[in-house]
Amino acid sequence: MPGDERGVRSVERGSIGEDMSERYFPDGMPPPLADTTTLPWWQAAAEHRLVVQRCADCQATRLPPSPVCAECRSPEFDWKEVSGGGSVYTFTIVHRPIAADQALPFVIAVIALDDSGGIRMISNLVEVECDEVEVGMAVELVWEDMSEELALPRFRPRQS
Image (tube, rainbow, N blue to C red; front, side, top):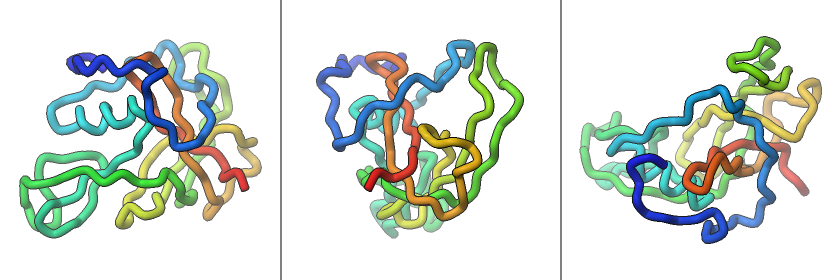
């Protein structure tokens, strides 16, 4: 991730026992940008760890990261690692490309994350046919490695 000098290589990343996904992010899309608030989240993602911010005062969780708690306005926080399991809260099927050479159709879903304190996360649902997706479907995390420094969380139907 630009601005991050950790030097963690993909072969040194932690694993949560999930396979890597194939490449879904179109080459024409600009990479995400990190700032001082979001950099720890991107660093954890590069290590294949999904984390949410947790307020150090009231324990409320939040994602995306922000400098203050929306519940109590405290600027103090830590990071809580979550399992990456969850369920489809809602979804849409995209039929028009947002970048050149993008495979269509694809699914954008809101995932209700397990053990996260009620966090919902927007991501792509992969490794599933569009007509098989349904609200409530159990999903699991899979990482899309964009480079040695950047990994994006995706979700797929939970493997039993």
